[in-house]
Amino acid sequence: MPVLILYNTDHGSTAEIASRIASRIDAVLPPTEVHNLHDFDATTLPNYTAVILGSAVHGAKWLPEANTFCDVHKETLITKPVYAFSAGAPGALPKVFRNWCGNHEEKAIFEGLKKRLDGKVRMHRLFSGKIEREDLPGGLRMCCGLFGGMRYGDLREWDKIEAWADEVAADLKRDQEEGRE
Image 1 (tube, helix red, strand yellow):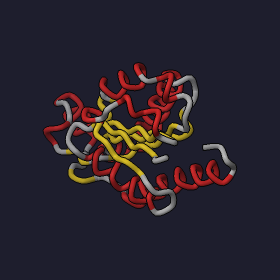
Image 2: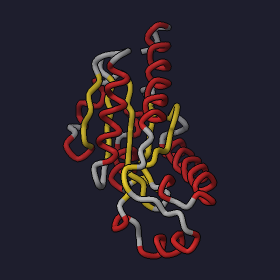
Image 3: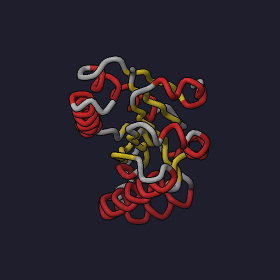
């Protein structure tokens, strides 16, 4: 059965990350299906071996639709291997805040997902997305601008995204080899 990658995006960056993850996993465990959360027929959720969920992040939280999906489909999701990724703005922050905020945000999102899905999320990673000046709230732009070093543009680090996708693929491959599908 296929692996499902479901994403919720705000400006398209998360969709592109989902596609890149799928290409890496397909090299090890075809087939992978990638769907926008808004277009996905959730009645087919039981048909997948594993689920990789992704969402854009606003205010250190997944978009509401992604959280609602997890809540509504929790009983099905917790019966499968679940992995998660987020696309946010840690790479846009001034260097003095980047690591601390990114680590704090990643941990908060992962803990929230584990709580929401009864601890059944195997891995989570926060990636920087594409950030344009107008995408950030004015207060955040002004606060971080005082410290200098705000960055905008495509801040995705494809090597890190691909390395995480390879970790997920290896974990799924182990499941397959050990008969834990």
